[in-house]
Picture: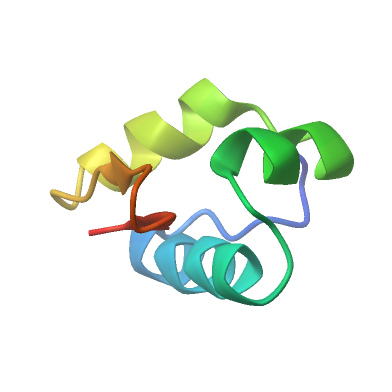
Length: 60
C-alpha cells in the first residue's frame, strides 16, 4: 500500500468504501488507478472481519 492510506484498519475501511462508493466501479479499478496493493487492503480489512463484496462494491 502507498503511505497515504491509513494503517488503522477501521480508518482504511472508511477511505476505501468511500472511494468505491463515490468514484470506482470495483476494487480492482481503484487499486489499478491509485497504485494500491489489493491483497494488502484485503488482508488489513480481514483483521477487523470485513471482506469485499463484489456485488455491492464495498467491504462489509
